[in-house]
Amino acid sequence: MGPYPINAARNIFGMEPIEVTAIGFKTPGREFLQMEYDTINVTLRFPGERMAQFVVGYSAANTNCYKVVGTKGDIEVNPAFAWGHGMNIAYKTKIDGKEDSKCFPETDHFGGQTEYFSECILQNSDPEADGEEGLLDVRVIVAIKKSLEENGKTIKLEARDRKKRPTLDQAKKLPLATGPKNFIGRDSQPPSTG
Image (cartoon, rainbow, N blue to C red; front, side, top):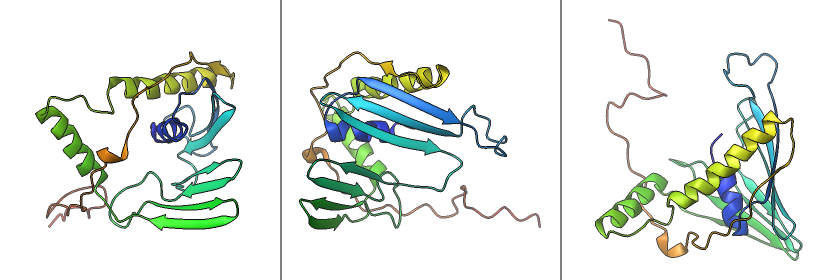
């Protein structure tokens, strides 16, 4: 399980969760997946009676979206976490009955992250996604694991307040890079034996 949905919830709410509950199961016939659970449902509770829920798994159809529902409307981002050729992050909103949507151009997420991190090194400045950011994701992952071990028991987390969050001025818009020629990867044809 990666931290993408955890990180999305933390940053959408601009706060840290105070409770974690997780339930997992192993789908029959999926024994080749050498893991205790192939599907995990997580609920994160935040201050102010806010809640985030997500499911991660290896036995369901690939779903790549999230939806935030509030008292005045909702926003749905789809796709939300994937990247690469043909993947444009897009969102739809419905607020007080008024609908809107936007589709962003393809961008090289890893290239932008690499450029930003390189600039931080060259300018001797601390990156926004620092060790604290990683620690805040990991403490939620540890609580998820503990909740699973305790049959879905709600795990309380110490209240934390992260002062520094991503800002729009950090966004880097780079066109997608083309892959190298003769690259051998996951989707490559097997080598000929002739």
